[in-house]
Image 1: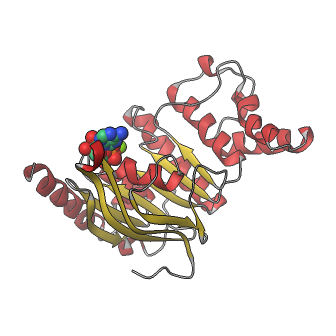
Image 2: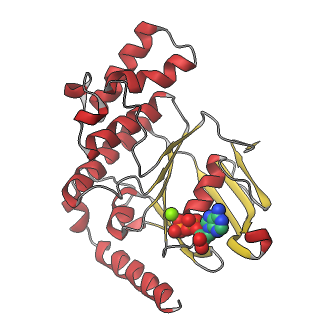
Length: 262
Ligand SMILES: Nc1ncnc2c1ncn2[C@@H]1O[C@H](COP(=O)(O)OP(=O)(O)O)[C@@H](O)[C@H]1O
Ligand SMILES: [Mg+2]
């Protein structure tokens, strides 16, 4: 695959081995991620989704191959790539507002500007009313909203999310997904998210890269054409869209193939 000129991220022949080279977690993966596209990594447990994401984040190095962001090789973590994990990562001794301001303070943004931006971002994640609350006073979903606002505050070009809503109950998860649609529309970041939730992947993503395991390779790489480039503020509207059910059924079929092949 040759890198596309509009690719925000390019992975070329990326392999990641563990256990002294005896186990291959990710095997010869090449992918281009166009700017502002939302990609979901889907596949069975252990197929290398997290490993691939961590290499893009610069938290792990490929054993072979290379990854670049806007043509610059990834040599480690950087503020251009914001990472959101399943576990909430706020500082317990800071309020929601102070948590969002923190990263901006580190990079030297002045008090007035960072206060204004933090307030805007808290509004964006529907947490304007809880600016002065401490994480211990917030629910799981609210803590994750703080983490998302905090990551956005550093103005990354790329947003990397690993099962970001995996610890939340079904209703909160649904609310978070709809909020993510708003954020994606406003922020226009290049997004890569890992999820094992098929419906979540179809709802949030423009494209799904489905991995197979042992070794982790790309099984399928599909653009969700049936959405016609639309993003649906309300999830039930997606479910009613012609073509939705075919994609869902296809993804379940791939997942079953993977589970049965052990
Ligand atoms: N640090 C590590 N050492 C050894 N094996 C690892 C390490 N990290 C991940 N693996 C293995 O690599 C494979 C892919 O892991 P991971 O990327 O976490 O999968 P996924 O996120 O798709 O569930 C798994 O078999 C996992 O056990
Ligand atoms: Mg994982």
